[in-house]
Length: 130
Length: 108
Image 1 (cartoon, each protein chain N blue to C red):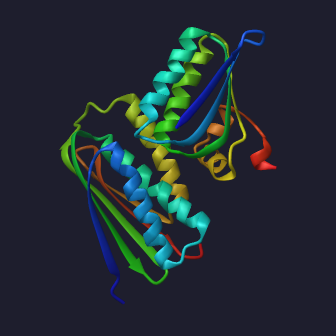
Image 2 (cartoon, rainbow over the protein chains, first blue to last red):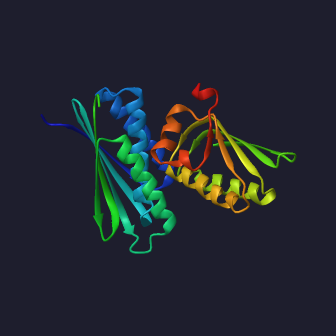
């Protein structure tokens, strides 16, 4: 079955994270996730965005896509801009570790697309009823 | 994010109440406020999170940063009244073992 796709392009700035979180809640509601699962998805989307924003030196934009299947939500978050190279601070690494713990717990599957040592895209799936 | 603050000179403790959301947008302001309070009085901290609806990893990072500074003078940070969903985040990240978390009305 083909999945429905919703795409969103937002500036890669902190003030727009909430918009993406709220959109993810609306999409998850459409599939039928319950309140707790929707909170998990919102949290995971925010953490994935934070992880990517923290690795951009001159944040440009984020491309967020949601694929809707009857019992699965797939989320792909990709950053565009100039990436930090090897100068990622210890603070950013600690932050990324916290984010990874949260993503791993909230979602059923998480993939990190790493290029030149930076996470440039994150793909996540959550199954209904798990 | 709304930050209510009161310092008890007898117990040398800051009582802070947090409301709303602490996220990547307002975490820098939250960090600055906490560090200003630490500079004013190097006391312990009791954070009442009864009104806190959301905190992300940047907010948690601010709490960790504050804890490091408070530990420098052997102080402590107690966190009270976490809503169940936010407590879950502390457990997932292992921060429930670093902070003193007290059960409050939200968890009963």
